[in-house]
Amino acid sequence: MWSRGGSSVPGGQSVSTTIIQELLDIADLGIQVVFNSISDFGAFFDDDCDGHYVPFWGLSDSERAITGAAIASALIRLSGAPWKGLLIDGLECVDSARLPPLLRALARMVETGALDNVLLTHRAVTPAEIPVVEGVTIHWVGRESAAARAA
Image (cartoon, rainbow, N blue to C red):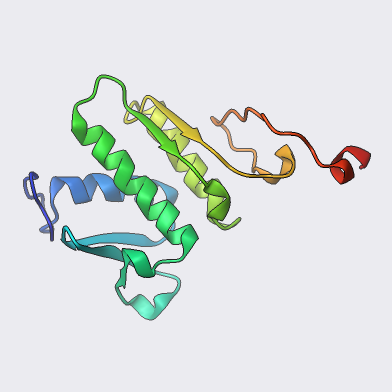
């Protein structure tokens, strides 16, 4: 395991890997992040890939967004910054089955104080395309399509 700048915890993982895994465990998506080195990191997935390690750049867009959010949230928490804000752009690439658990996990991270705020962008045609999740406030700044207004 890669542990640059981190101390080990039970199980041989670095502190940073443990913090990365926290968001994924809350989301309960069956994703296990692995850091072999600074240039070799990726994930295992319970539901696909036959339990094989997949390098980060071999992940789907959805898997990369989720894994990247977990890595970014860990970096923010380890930074010691006075304000722990996370910005995730392009959330529309997260598949519809994984988006609600990810949003719930991010809301939980804010609720517990692990993060101060999470700002997400999602290119949607209507606000209804974004799942309603307790603890998540949606600010719609786009325009609805003509078909959506007619409905």
